[in-house]
Image (cartoon, rainbow, N blue to C red; front, top):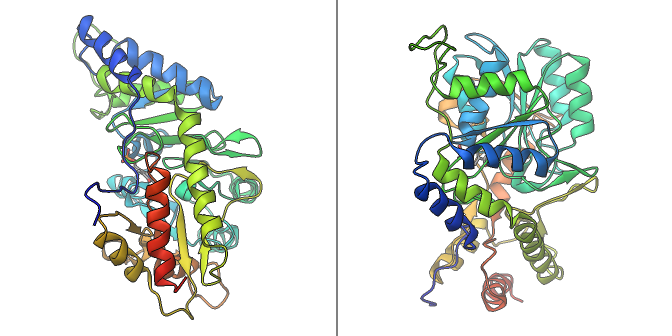
Length: 377
Ligand SMILES: *Cc1c(COP(=O)(O)O)cnc(C)c1O
């Protein structure tokens, strides 16, 4: 067993982060506001090519505020991707709205336009649709956005995993009415924890900033006409983000190289299929994933166990939200005509492979050899 643990995806720091943080200390800007926060918002907006951005304490906070700005409230229906992390849909329930879960399609693993269409037939007036770009792969945005426009429903783009991925040449997160990013420790760039809400809607972003700082009205005294939140990003974490953003393209290139290496290494094993990419997009390959054919005796658990024995981290695919006990009372619309769910199938047959950009060539060969051996190669 190797002593060094090989991680799924963990922070990669470069040094510039500390310089921005040091500057914050030197100027005593140790607060949930300050020059790093303002600069990080500007730099992120410029990087993804959008008008405005609000730096927040988490990606989850960004989703919550997007729902608030759209006026989502008790009893409203909100459609959400089912195959995702719970952070995508938890904020729907913070507002006592009703999540309705949409299955994946097999081509990108993201929200199925077919299932979405069915959901619109049952619920013609949802207040919003939240869709993810899972593991970095862009969703079928043209089809999804066309359906949302047809029903005049705003699309919230959960690009927490896909910062730097593009669809038809444009950054994911910039297609919806609102886009959100996450800087959690395992994401493509990190601030230790943090998030960003982006939009062309400058007033909406201003409202998000206000809500994120306890909804203080403009007055000398403390005046409030709305319930607010403590969701603003701190000037320290924003400094980490500014340093990270300088290296995002390098992180993306390394993630893509990892995916390519796995794909080539397993090309002669017909039972293994790598997670799909969208031919209309360029994925950041945040996590490389594989699925195993049902006819094969090797299971995802066996692969994860074999890796763990060698101190190598891997993870199951996100368990779909419609299968979670906490969400079991809510509706779900499947992609397949027979009602079987594509997301459940991916969950059953898949796993996330170690995708840390600090993996050395030897680490990668070691991981690949363990998996190949399981498949008698
Ligand atoms: C990480 C993640 C989030 C939430 O981000 P936090 O910054 O951890 O709150 C939301 N959606 C998806 C799909 C994620 O992977």
